Image (cartoon, rainbow, N blue to C red; front, side, top):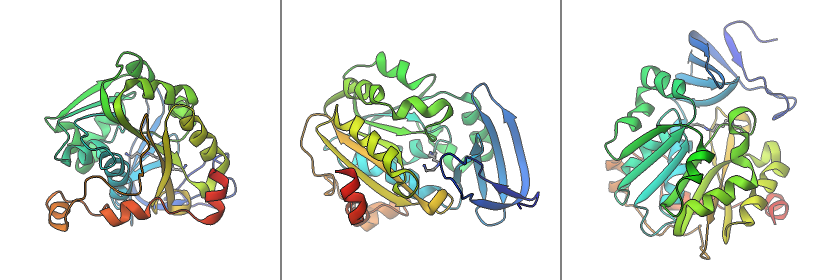
Amino acid sequence: MIARDWFSEQQQDLWPGQAFSLKVIKFVHEEKSKYQNIKILETETYGTCLVLDGIIQCTTRDEFSYQEMISFIPLNSHPNPTKVLIVGGGDGGVAREVAKHPLVKEIHQVEIDKRVVELSKKYLPNMACGFYDPKLQLTIGDGLDYMRKHEKEFDVIITDSSDPIGPARSLFEENYYKLMSNALRPGGVVCSQGGSYWLEAGYVKDTINSCRKHFRSVAYAHTSVPSYPCGHIGFIIGCVDFTRDFKSPITNFSDKELDDMNVKYYSSSIHSAAFALPRWVEKCFK
Ligand code: SPM
């Protein structure tokens, strides 16, 4: 039984038989936007927490692990990632990380729910600072519609979505990978929130297979995020038309460069390590 000052994730279909919980100091805000239920919680040990439709999206304690990895793995897997598209990412944390990369000149972001952006600006300023970067142009709208109108434009597309229920479901389907392949310039790279093999190995494999239908090189990388179920989440990364060994970053930052960019989790060695998979997962994803 969960006491009233604890928040507990509820989605039984995605992680049956388990529910991650955080002790709450203050229920800061709750509303129903056009797309989803949005909660902001102040927690005892994970800082401020954004919850969409009952699922934790980020906490100020551990968000950098996710935001840095989903950004720097694809950016450093492309020789010259000048023009980047972010789909989703309404808290601004991915924009914050992408803006740090010295080769990135233009960032376009499309997020469906303007209330997530507005509330993040108010309650999650250390992530939402990404929205104020001069390289960024934000569009409030549907990622698939946006992609249909932008062919052969981007070097890197990052999809920072919630889970495949509610407004993000279509971002895990084959048609979305097809649209992304059309929106990329030659040599373009995608990286999408891909779920955890601990929770949903079969679903992850289906998404990898959808990516394989439209991309020449495909791989799965993973990171640890304590506030996500099983403390684990992965990314599906693909290069549209070249064979690419994603394990070896093309751009390698020195420790000084990483410190200067305030990068806390990502490094060249953790980039390579993120692609090492347990034997049972290697077999499952083949
Ligand atoms: N910018 C941070 C947004 C986070 N987007 C991903 C959230 C996923 C939450 N659920 C994880 C469960 C694993 N399938």
